[in-house]
Length: 94
Image (cartoon, rainbow, N blue to C red; front, side, top):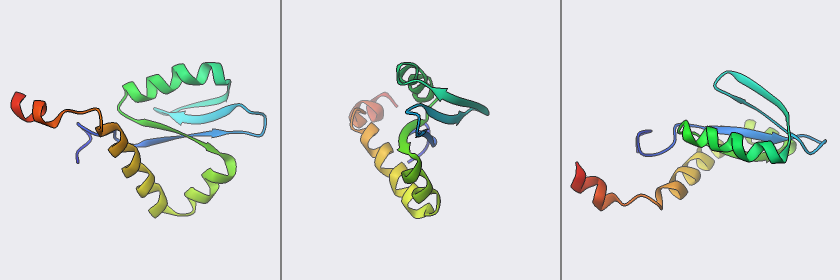
């Protein structure tokens, strides 16, 4: 399914050993993001048509080494977000 209906990519949000998160979004590095600030930033990511996904450092390294798992994760995320789409309405509206 195309990116007009599903998200376009996953944005890995990696939790460091200090409990803070880091990620790259639209070419900007975000480091030492507190859990309080993360929720707002994840909203910005979703509004841009992307899926933020939280990882521990070890989970991120494991997935980075296995592109097939990354693809599966993206598919699962996009299908989960499609649950709120009413396809009958989309078809009827055109």
